[in-house]
Length: 331
Length: 223
Ligand SMILES: Nc1ncnc2c1ncn2[C@@H]1O[C@H](COP(=O)(O)OP(=O)(O)OP(=O)(O)O)[C@@H](O)[C@H]1O
Ligand SMILES: [Mg+2]
Image 1 (cartoon, rainbow over the protein chains, first blue to last red):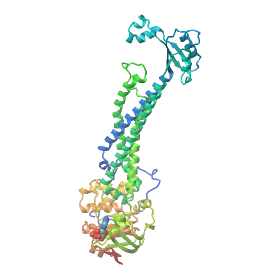
Image 2 (image 1 turned 180 degrees about the vertical axis):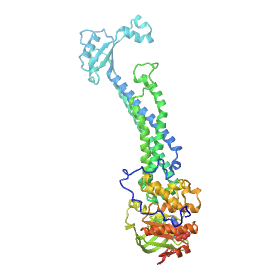
Image 3 (image 1 turned 60 degrees about the vertical axis):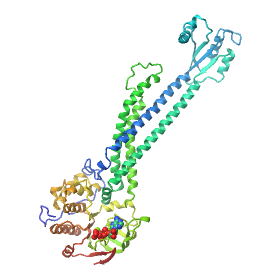
Image 4 (image 1 turned 90 degrees about the horizontal axis):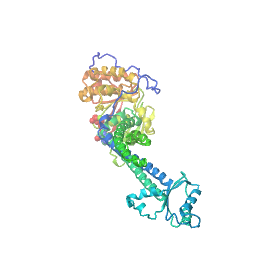
């Protein structure tokens, strides 16, 4: 040791080092310098591939979430509309009713008005009807005096259901009366919506699974690239928690960065889809309406920032588990 | 404190098991004791050291380190024990991406010592081994002897209860070897148990001490 000191200078081993304090949080100073990279993970778990793969996963997750959400919302909207409305056609409305009293239309209206679930029942005026038919019949509807059926638009009290025997009752009063409920369509729609949501859920699960696999593979590669360093640090008394924590924090940062990237990339796509979907969700609003572009549904505004958090959690937990399992091979 | 009772070592386990490299070793080094460890190349000196610094577990027999029966110790109890053992590896084993300063500071950081307490200690140690000017150099920028001195500084920075040095003077000149022995003696005087493996007969002659001799994995001398 040809140091600047004289060879006779005592070695610096006076008993001055206190045993490491267990209450180190209170002791002066922080632990380790910022960015201290004893395992060389900046290169072994590099910021090249992992964040991009995680970003792709987050992007797909965002689309899946948006799909599930949009399906749910549209289905709900349609279903509400469908449940609340009913059209009833009465052919030859002016013929006498089956009971013999009054016209058929009046008899049907009387039954409907007596029904507690019916909020409103309104026969369309023949003008309305003619207007409705004009594209098909031209002015013939009015001029030819075709025998037009009466059409009654029935609005139900929200949440109420009509008795099953209503159409039979109506047909008894006025033969051939057709009750057109949207129930069947509502059922079909909700079945479709449920299937689409199941697909979205499967896609989310797959995305999570692939993300876990990606982090695992990257961590394993990092482990074999840094095997020597890990063995040295392990030999110096580092616990499994210390070593696994190093990897976990690095993987968490990279995954979170990927999550942010994926969510940001998904944002314009989702806004565009929301813009396209807006007319459907708002019922009769025309496509030409200037829908504000920030019109993402609230749950999506919550789900998007959750993506980086979820990615970070997946990165942390996966890397921690992978490293701890690997470390069991060391004594 | 080190005690071995009929300890054997075989590398690999199960199907991958290889031939035994250490056979039926029994010896005792009391707290604060000093031993030279000699023997021809391939005799098993490094293997014995590896066992004592807990890098491999004995395949047979009983080994007690610092009062702890290693055969019965749980895996999670070992890190705490390892922190009390300073090791100078035959091949240094410095971390290539860390500077000399960070390499020497590593045991303190692993032990959870706050940064505020580290700098002065590490600087003093590096100054003492004559590397004050090289604190920011990476191992590949250092000569063999300089790397060895960094390895020595790292081994003693935490003032370990046990010191295991494997050929620590291999790359040092006589004056440096002399200073190293002073350091080891000082630590030993302060209560550190030490085993130093060496081929350096003249150093052993200048610092006579009890000697463990290995030959082909057998302990042939302990006096
Ligand atoms: N990791 C290992 N796996 C299998 N065999 C090993 C391993 N390390 C060492 N050996 C074998 O153990 C025997 C003893 O080796 P060891 O390194 O302990 O000798 P040594 O006394 O330190 O030699 P030297 O003086 O050359 O350093 C050798 O025959 C070697 O081949
Ligand atoms: Mg050796």
